[in-house]
Image (tube, helix red, strand yellow):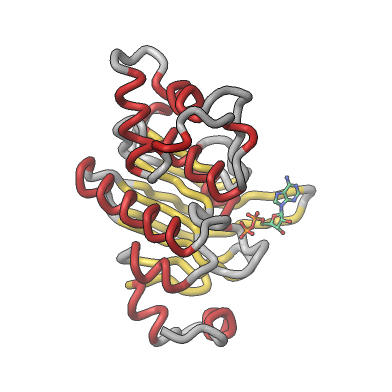
Length: 225
Ligand code: ADP
């Protein structure tokens, strides 16, 4: 279980995240939505351990680094083949090539295995990075806008890959999205952030179809189910 209390993150003395309390259950699919700058990336980075909070407590249930898969919004690609880029996530494993191919197949990238990883389109690079994350069994997936640069077909492929992976591994999934419909398809609960604070938190369907907070209503104003 992920549990945080009184969590505050500051940049240059400006508080950008201020969460009183939040728990996310093991195996849960949890979405973060809200306008640009509301703190989604910051929260994911705190959960991934790449940032430290200035105040409060954050407990991710004793997970070790290798058990957490973090997909940043702009993932790094090495000047290697796509397959080798994915194999890098499998250091120390036997059958690295087979596991890397399986991960590429999951995200529909097997035909691009010989392409240079650092010459891919934005959407392809993001899918390659996702393959790197999904190459190992993880207990917690933290995905920052996993389909931000993807076209409709790639979005469908990625969402199916995530659902399959979660069914197989029982992992917890926390992801950010600017698309409320994606939150509806992939998550059971959603946190709508408002200026770094909890704007609204609840079952995805309820929050999206009947938002209580004014900030969520404004965010969802131009979106129809
Ligand atoms: P979101 O992912 O919802 O777009 P972020 O978590 O990226 O929001 O950013 C939250 C706030 O923190 C924004 O106002 C952003 O400008 C600020 N911020 C993020 N990273 C830094 C940084 N490294 N230095 C200073 N301010 C930052």
